Image (cartoon, rainbow, N blue to C red):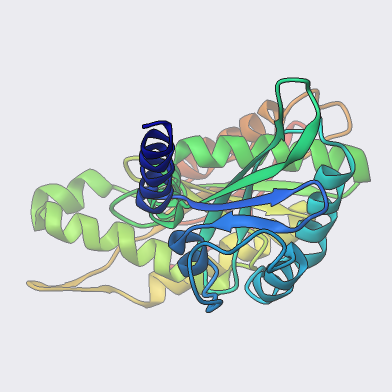
Length: 315
């Protein structure tokens, strides 16, 4: 009767072991494999035979050497494994990036008997690739303007604060270009919102052609955009803004009901030694933008001290 009960319990545990969505590996205190399930083999693309092996048949190093070929950072993975083996009191929850773009979540904990003697370790590996892809998608959506695909206001201000801190730490220059589409409401009213949307996308496409990889273009709202330009002096930012303005003026937008011509005004602000936050740079860029609007639009201006520099506009 007792034997039948033990057989039932063993079969139940084995069934649970194999039905688990996680890859499971159990090793003893010497690193010898006690058991693993088929899911463990599948996750690491291993072909070692039966899903359960007898004690002493396989050492975990054999499995580890094969698994390391799949792992993007095998040195870090191996170092963590060795640290866990060296200290049985450690528990581990971490993510592992694989070379085939999958991501695993690893859990590991020590096994103890009733007398608190160390028996070995159990490792759980779960494929969280879909979850990570969804998280990345949500992150991208939370930082992107859905119409134009450029950074949104939230992303811009987060990055601007980071670049401000970096510029303060390194002494490098930092400039911001505020951009506004001139008379954008008139485009929407006369040509429709579909054409207005094409104009917004055209501005972004034009800016991407001229910007460096380190620059960030963001839509702050409506027809207002900003370019964050790290390691860029006010002269460099004025040059970028003027090139963008001329590029847009020379290339009308192709819409379904005919071409649409438009212009932009731009204001440039640069980090000052007295700035306590990025707000000082943004305020100067805003002031320069308003000055460009008052001066007749279709121009780029920079605030330097209490005056504005006005590059010649191309009419």
